Structures are given as structure tokens and as C-alpha cells.
Length: 61
Image 1 (cartoon, rainbow, N blue to C red):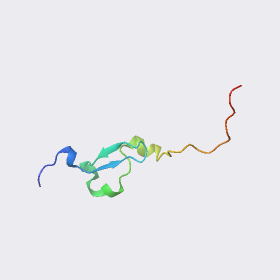
Image 2: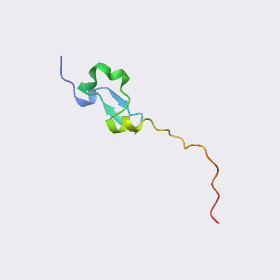
Image 3: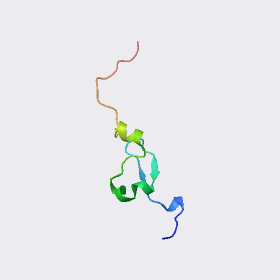
Image 4: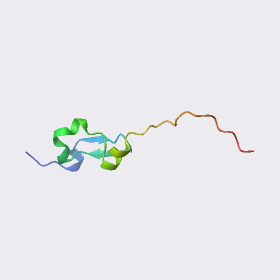
């Protein structure tokens, strides 16, 4: 098997921080199920991009 440069490796976007991350050897068998770039992101879980609905704020007087 021929070596690949880093730019040739597959990439994904982290479900938590929305940053791209590159394939790693330790994820070789489970790449389809990898969602997070790090243990820190995995522990905090996915984030929502929209703010949670709540009561409207009053303008300062």
C-alpha cells in the first residue's frame, strides 16, 4: 500500500465544534461511526446552532 499525504486522507466535520478533522489510523475500523474530533467534544455532545426559544427580552430603559 502506498503512503498518502495528509491532504489525501478523508475528512469529516465534528458534530460538536463544527471543525474539520482528518482520518486517523485508530479510527480505521470504525470511521463510518466517528462523529467527534476529540474526547472533549464527545463528552460535551452535539451542539445546536439555533438559540433555544424563550421569552422575549425587554429593551433596557
